[in-house]
Length: 157
Image (tube, rainbow, N blue to C red; front, side, top):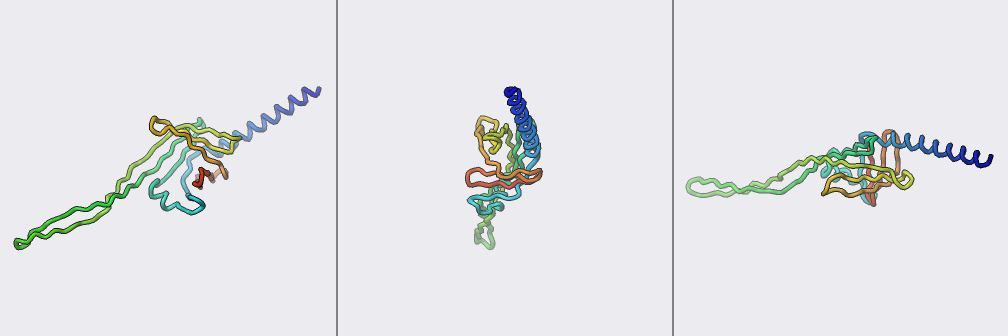
């Protein structure tokens, strides 16, 4: 009798955990956009948005993810022009910034680890197959806060 009661109790706990996990994963899945970026507890959103413009993280039910953003590169450049007026050569230097915009699209697989406290992202591809671990600070239907070392990402749906 005690064994049956123990078995029923254990089955109930497992069922409850499975329901909570499904609800947790449903909240986690979707397209998340960067709202705020903190580095060492200082707001560095403007700098992050310059180098990772339009950052989005799409987390799918089938344990895959896609990251996308535009990388802005600024290179100082100049050109020298010359003009001859009345036999005299005049040189002028025009200085400008060359802006290069490179789109980034990365994908891979995700999993919840450490009792669903951490989100692990594993990128696909030979040159970028590194695992990144994020501690999940907050998760609601529209807000996701992730911590990676001293970098905190505040994401919104």
